[in-house]
Image (cartoon, rainbow, N blue to C red):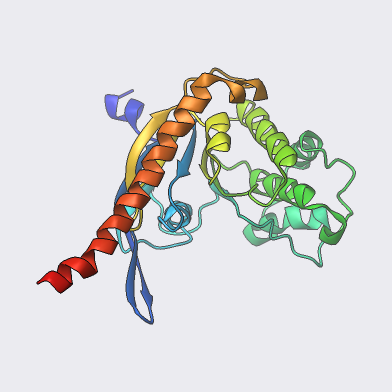
Amino acid sequence: MSDAAIIQPKLGVRNATKSYSTRSGDLLAIDDCSLDVKAGEIVSIVGPSGCGKTTLLWSMSGLHQLSSGEVLLDGKLVDGPNPEIGMVFQDANLLPWRNLDQNINFPFEIMGAKPDRAWVDDLLGRVGLAGFGGRMPRELSGGMQQRAALVRALSFKPSVLLMDEPFGALDAFTREEMNQMVEEIWMDSPTTIVLITHSLEEAIFLSDRIAVMSPRPGKVASIHEVPFARPRSLEIMATKEVFDLTNIIKKEIVGDQQSRYARSSDAPVAQAAR
């Protein structure tokens, strides 16, 4: 095996730039953003609101085309939706006229493939939804719907799972339960995970590394290693190590926001002084 094959990331973002056209002009969401994700690791992306985290994640999925730059999966260009990439959105997005089993089967219908029923049943059992296949989405709680969305995303065995703030609307206890469940499933599978979250505690609990983005136009400003062995218990969240890492990352995010606000506030003053 060549050295290049050994160090090649599972997912690589190279100088990604994405600009949107709006009524008030072009909006530069991310600019010259690069990030490598190794096979089998969990990387969380955090940053100030509006910094382009979701734009970056959707670009990784192939759902958004970049203005420039590229996304590579195993060294190959991602230029559209890819069956090797699964995605869990902020909302469960279950089709209300289909029951749980039918919702899980929907991606297979689109791909013209047959689901691995044993694998799906195993996932349903792991997330506590065994026996709920005939239930409609309206009969499921918010937490149950997000579990179903996770099963749907994992059902076709993607090698990369992208998660866009999937547990943000859940209560704290359900969110902790979901985090433990994600780690458990991840430890038993080769899936590589990239997670967008506003919760630094969630990022620390789940991640091997945490990428901190700058304010818009976003780019990766820093990366932090998470030094805890797996499996992780919720008890680590009360340790000084977690407290210190949380504060370091929080200061980076808040500092960037304050610095940006100061620059924007100074601009009119400087202009008036000319």
